Image 1 (spheres, rainbow, N blue to C red):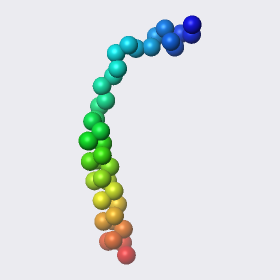
Image 2: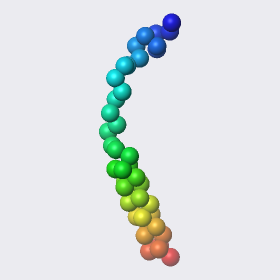
Image 3: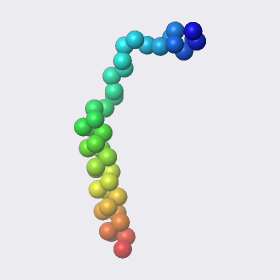
Amino acid sequence: MSKAQDTKKDAKKEPTKSIKEKKAAKKLKKDEKKREGFTRQ
């Protein structure tokens, strides 16, 4: 077997941000970009 398979972690690492947090951040960023577009014109 290769080394990568031997050293593979058994425990799954917890995500730093939950899916809900990621989506909220993405939505916020998108809204900011929209607002910037309106102010430029």
